View 1 (tube, rainbow, N blue to C red):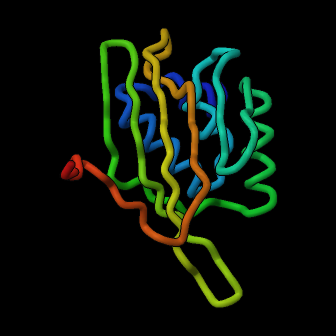
View 2 (view 1 turned 180 degrees about the vertical axis):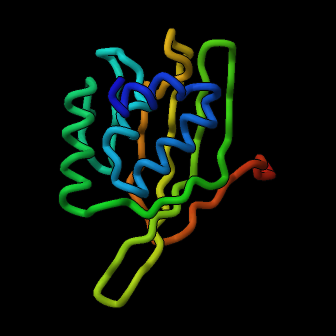
Amino acid sequence: MPKARQQAATLGGTPDEVEATFYEALQSADIEKLMSCWADDEDILCIHPGGPRVVEALAIRAAFDAIFGHEGSIQVQAESIRRIASMASAVHNVLERIEVMTSEGPVHAFVLATNVYHQTPRGWRLVVHHASPGTQDEVQEINQVPQVLH
């Protein structure tokens, strides 16, 4: 069994495990590991910050191949994960802290991403990765309703 297929067969115990594998693959520029996280479904989609909607596995693979070919690995850490789960799907909203190399040295950028997972016959798999345009400032979370006087 090829390494990618073997890895895919063992992946998928939980959405958290698939997510950890996805971010590890970004950090190591491992396209086989990254693609093993995705569902075998023609309706899977990925939206990179400020980019178009990329649909289907071959197009998603080509998009990440281009990123890895141009930038190499992506030094990203998933933080502040908010989870919504049901029996057959899970939605994770993630703050991605990305280290970007500039002429003045490394700086951090912050991206909000939403990852959607479905329970498939192969286990949990990623069906949507949607990342917002990045910012140099850490994204603030609003979790209280402001008091408004009338």
